[in-house]
Amino acid sequence: MTEGYFVPDGSWGWVIVGASLIFNIIYDGCSYSFGILYEHFLKDFKKSKSNTAWIGSLFFSMPLLCGPLASVISRKFGYRNSTMFGGLIAFIGFFLGTFSSSVLMLTLSYGLLSGIGMSLPYFNSVVIVANYFNKRRALAIGIAESGSGLGTVIFAPLTYTLISKFGWRGSLLILSGIVANIIVCGALYRPLESIEMTLSITESSDKELSDQIPEGINVIDDKRKVTDSDEKLLEKNIPHENCKNPATTLSRSLNSLVSRQIEKQSQRCGCIHPLLGLFKNVPLLLFSVSIFVMYFWYDVPYVFLVGKSQSVGIQESSAAFLISLIGIVHMGGILLYGCLGDREYVSTSLLYGVSIFVCGIGVAVIPLCKTYVPIAFLAACFGMFSAATEALVSIVVIDIVGLEHFDNAFGVIMLMEGLANLIGPPFAGWLCDISGGYDMTFYAAGFSISVSACIYLLLPLFKKRNNGKENK
Image (cartoon, rainbow, N blue to C red):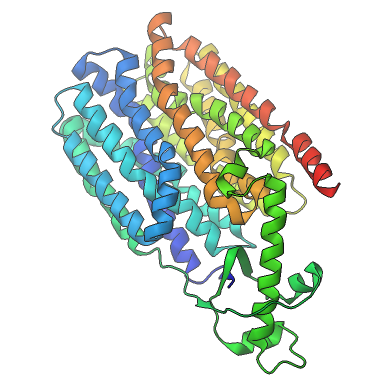
């Protein structure tokens, strides 16, 4: 028996992209506007920057730390059900946060519970878009991920306005209602319909078998499903001389091809279990280290830029707009990187590495600026070049391990991002506390982000080495 699916590359896939876009607007909007809430938490609870930063770090990290668990749950219960359930948990966390009387209570409700709830729709928003598209995958993912920029544009001024009128408790209550819309987004995640075919294999070369597969059908494991049950589609794509049923030839060919692909992938990973093999994949491990370093410091501008701006005499309203500015440019950057990622003449590795390197330099220069305009310019640079992480990470992962192992590999990457986001903001806050200001934190963040880019740029060397061993 073989299993797969016909990739629509459009149709209902664009509804999926729209639902994922709305989720990203909500989640990333809440995440990246946390810096505005953070300043009010500091004033209200009068705790250290490091302790208060745990609220945001848990909210940032739990969707990523729970990536492997989200992968298992989504495979068992489906993208739709798991996303709706996750949206419900996130709503409850936000709602309970309005009644918090301490940093600990706020950390457990708004930070931990809501973060866990966000893990399911966060994981599914990327994976389901990748499954619905093939040729235009980078563009589709780029459009969906552009919600992070659009969410920042919307939620930064929205959060500031809500706090001004209702306080941070009233703001969380209203935000909980907005978060509940994730349930609606999940309801739109319609599963790909499919049929099964189980037949014996025929002897053919890999090239011949590949040529016999209709364009747009992806092989994902040792089972096979084809969504279009119309035999006319099969007759158009599959030669069926001496065969009364063209579906028979397709199933036989796919069965043989899938078995050989799985055997080759297992040999390349050096393992039997796919997840264990991922940890033996040197390019993936190297990319994981780069991702960890990057995301350890990634949230520094979002959490501390408002406070840094106010420390040099910029008003809170103007400082809050810097977060919106990051979001505006970030949204355009994601769409740009999404378009570039689909171009054959563009090296995704080089594009990603150079962008992250420049992003780090921009963050490191922020402490040297004492007026609004240069800080705003550097904030825009951060928004532009950091967009590569949103638009290209999933493409890079697919390039490293293939679509058949994308779910598990993406879960590993999410885990690394989560670990970094868990300890990064509190460490950055501690650095602010001991240094008595924000400058040291921005210097360290910028330098480390550029180092993560240098680590990633080593990836092609290891990929060539692995390919060489495979050819031997």
